[in-house]
Length: 303
Image (cartoon, rainbow, N blue to C red; front, side, top):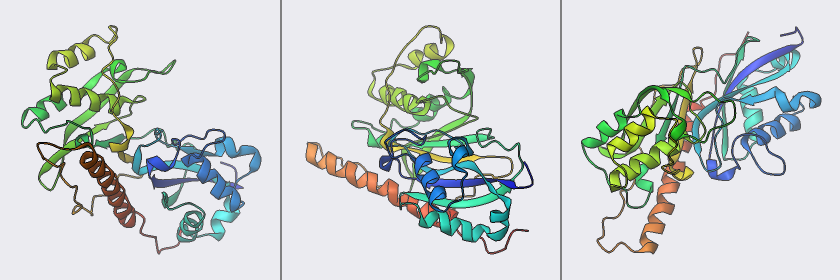
């Protein structure tokens, strides 16, 4: 990095249904686009570099919520020296809608790449999919099927030139107040739609549409194409991205509640629809409270 510029790592959260995905696109509202707009309003970006000067770590589709993602931006060192992290965070956040939380910012070296992370954590609320029922103890066994280093092309929307080999460290039940509501999956990196396709495979295991052998075969024989479908984005949360310098903070807000799906034997369409609307609001409420903890402003000035 030249003496006149500084590279800054930042972390953000956002509500997925407010944006047409994370990556900038022409004529639609995206997370990257809104961040670039905020930095331009503050006159902090070089106009000739804006397309490449603000980069996000993990791409997310429209509808996918994010507790903690990250990115990098380059600005003038004289500006950074004139600011404290606290002032910068507040200034950027003031230029963003409430659906994006600009949480922290740190100086990094020229080589720091937000896309190269130690691991990423996703959580999916399976009970949001109609007809899902907690299968009990066997659920953990199903989740173990997705752990390991394997060719995941049958659980992804493949992009040309993308390596299908993925390393999944763990896949465990997501438990809220003693109730299994879905699953958490931790991996080095994920292919496009990989978590949502994993979610749909788990859902179909629960309904009997798929058998364990179907999953095993899809993983063991990736050259034999299968399509188990894609779960809705609404119930997916990118829980966090962990880097060597910036690990995922320890959870502090563990008291949130998710309302159980009504068990009425004659569950009406309107009742289910209203539960889903309330459940989506619960997801958003959870994220706002998470950001309140994650976004506590620093007091100590940087050197």
